[in-house]
Image 1 (tube, rainbow, N blue to C red):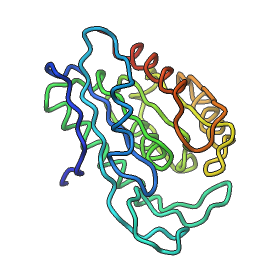
Image 2 (cartoon, rainbow, N blue to C red):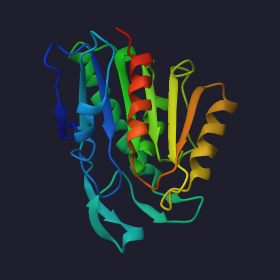
Image 3 (cartoon, rainbow, N blue to C red):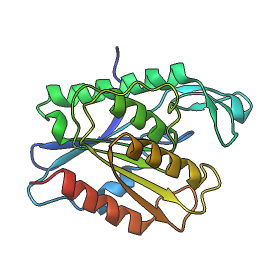
Amino acid sequence: MSLLPCVEVNPQQNANAAVIWLHGLGADGHDFEPIVPHIQLAAGVHARFIFPHAPKIPVTINGGMTMPAWYDILEMSIERSVDETQLRASAAQAIALIEREIERGIPANRIVLAGFSQGGAVAYEAALTYDKTLAGVMCLSTYLATHASIQPTDAQQQTPFLVQHGSQDPVVPEVLGQQAKQWLEQRGYAVTYQTYPMAHQVCPPQIQDISQFLQRVLPA
């Protein structure tokens, strides 16, 4: 499997942690790059931030227009109808990036997987089916698209999940974030759920909360 092209933001010192962050539909790996300077990590933690670019594919809900996407969305009903084969393929690509970080000397328990919107659905699938314990998982303004079909391993049973959502999100309604949280909690996962008075976006108080989460799961 060839690795996805990525934007990388490397620390000034040798990396001892990594954050792999998947963008949303129609965006690219540069989308969350400007957030990095605003994220505060614990002293002594030098994280490499990796922002992969999704491939460009036709997206049904956008009239078949070709754009960066992790998988096709077939309809925009509250339940969503997505191409699960493509989603699982994207999850495999995310896992390949995790494995590359391990090869570079970062253990799995020092790697955080994050995703926004479509990228968050991939992050859920990748993390829950991965066989090594991660430091944490961040799922932002997203949903668990494969809740009916996913076959999770036990590796993330103790891994902290941060689920964040905008209460005014018109693209991915907050109820979908709440459903994902409930799915995780019913299966014994450790979930922190946070909501903000925002739409389908990221806001400054949220970045502060992300910093606190990363300080907790990536200690010095």
